[in-house]
Length: 366
Image (cartoon, rainbow, N blue to C red; front, side, top):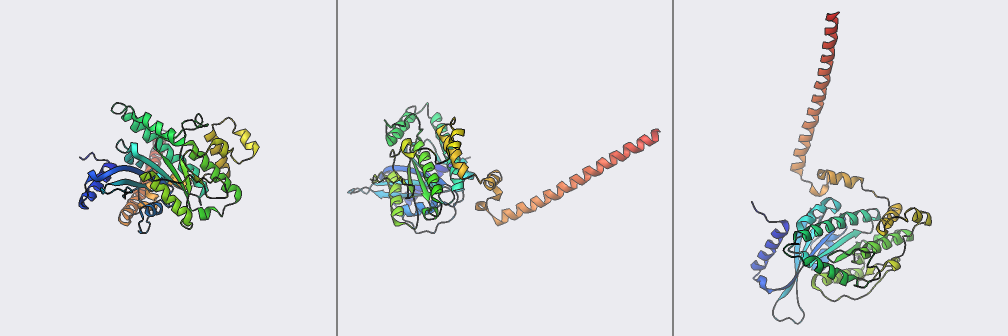
């Protein structure tokens, strides 16, 4: 039985494609690994296609998809190319366990997380980011624990790089917990987001700035209908994939698209959650993260009942629909229901017969 993981299989396929194209693996100068994840239908595939300059129409991603991009170094005459491997995890919260397959000891050192959140659905944002980032942190911790004997310095190296992105002497050093690998948060559908009220836009943008700063990431708003945002987002991908230069432009005005590079924000600039002083007093004993979570959910209550049902029962997820399998499943469900009703009827009959037998026995005794 093969012991290849999904990531090993993707790597093997990629290397074979290089050979088929007549390019040797030794021609690769450097390699990065990007995982694009986030809410359902948030535009993950669209972002990847724009970055890789692919014209393919975006289709729903079922579970996991893989592609790669290459880029020649400027003034490089040797033909050596940088490579970025891009894994897209579809399904939102329902497929978070796939991080166990795509985050491994082989790619952790060059890993980048791109978290895509749909700004037009603010009631889903906090829950989606929390579920995904929690799973990512758990997986990274598991991989680092596996590497303690063979590569004990890996954790220190990743932590050092994390604080270099934020700022080794940042004023918030004792109040934030940077992710071990680079995190990029992309807020999509900014054009629809603008239709929200000013107060709601302020809550979303401030909360995302807090989450982003707490995890030591960078944040960028995006819209397919805004050329400037589209171009900037493509540059962000290129920056984390190929280490190209990126302007230090920063925009934290709630009325404008957020653009926050690594280490460019602070808890003081983010400020307190925009809620009433009474609510702040009720939550004053909680951690900053819990304070923001409570404040956010007071404005945008969670609407996850359908998602929870799908997560518990994946057969309800339309992304995994298959007519043949679904029809067979329907038939089995009907058979099970008939069997259940038959069993209930027999159980009732047995109880009645037993009851009648007892009554008859008592009469005979009399």
